Image (cartoon, rainbow, N blue to C red):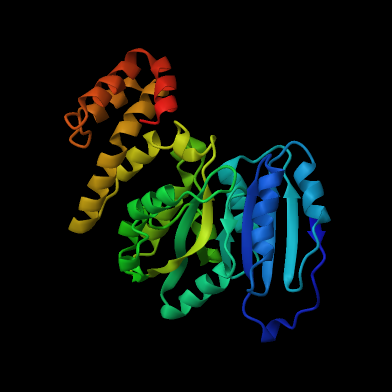
Length: 331
């Protein structure tokens, strides 16, 4: 383990509580540099930056060792051999965090200036706030902001002005994915107790799964949503949203949620309708044809809304290679 020296001596009792920024990374040193730079631009103090690296090469480690830290920052770096993979890597960071609150930041995403101060201050809205988050600005691979993707991404997640402030129904927030995939500030002990589930349990949908299980564990508490951009979410060719391991297990998990209020059931059913098509695709590509057909003929799959797409999904069951066409047109 490499531990960078602290910027200067801090009189902790006169300072706000420590916040940890937890960054899991894998083979993306240039993007990690961008993410790390955004952390060092934060005006909150004190901040601890923890980086857990699954990369097989030393490039990211060399980069991290070379960066000087401003006053009020500390940095710890671990290189994992063998690699831990996504869920275990995040769980390691949750376990190691020394701050009372932490921010999870993916290595290809960015915090905007003032984000941590704003998120931290929102905890003062109520003693029952367990997590805070703001608007996610969507950027392309080259870092260019995409206004259309940003508007769509936040509208789908109900991160719009009318939802500003304390969120009382955490399960609804998590199902709509208002609680974002990263860039949130959350109580560290709580994040540690919830943790990420493995690929075998939930596939690549571990971010959304974490949000739902966090909400289920904290009924009666509050999330705080800030009507300001606090982070940037980068769309990459390898982004989770373009993978085929995100929906098939997540769909079944959401389907089995129990003890929901009538309004939560309505939200759950809408989420299932939105994701049924992709769940059919994912199950088909994983050889689970029976499950794909069950979803296709369920009340959640909109078979008559787009007959051409429905025919395509049925075609995947016979010829999975058709998915290459789908990936090209992003239908």
